Length: 293
Image (tube, rainbow, N blue to C red; front, side, top):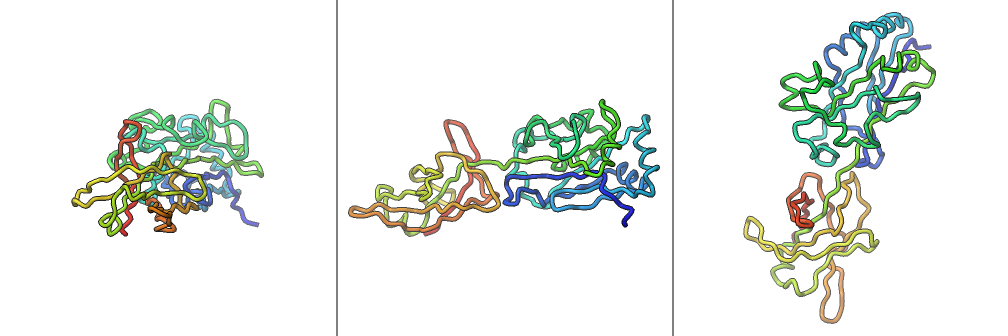
């Protein structure tokens, strides 16, 4: 039987992904945490949705010494980065506080089992901290301030409620979870090419959703930076950005005597293609999709 057992786990969930878990994150321990892991016989194991910290049962005394040290309270500190360059584009709340850092710790957690450590159900602006806040003291380097991690995580072994070590050693491992919500944007289609050149907006183009989940409205002609003219259509409501979509938006044209579907399935929004439009008299980020006919 292995001497190694799970001490605790970190699980990250994300509504952008079809699976509900977030597979694109790398957990980097701080230098202090890396030294503690090595000296106390602990290891970090990457999982599909986060990490597990495992301990060596034959070296439990070393871990207990760290947990009982009141002069230097034990915490496992991580800086988390994403290897998906678009992570911030589809994740809330990164637009909420530029320069601030998302921060999570377990000091408010009660009970065992799986526990959320964000202030609300999903990560929000309430979890943002200033880089010079006391919670981040000694965590961020000068390089981190210029190119910050996606978030910082601290797991404390002792809280106001006492030591958590005995709870961590229970047969059912402790799971600290963080939930991220996908960003929502209005989708804006630009119709270009032959259809535009040989028709007029009055010829009755429209975008429809046969499943009646999303409505689009015609926004009229728009002159692009390269001087081309596009017919534009924008969704009446914001649409959540997702890894995969089940929509089947269609381009329809109404003629004098009939209606026909010109394009059976329109392309979906791409996370990286964004622009700014005025929605309800406010400048709003929109997902831009270009259709060359």
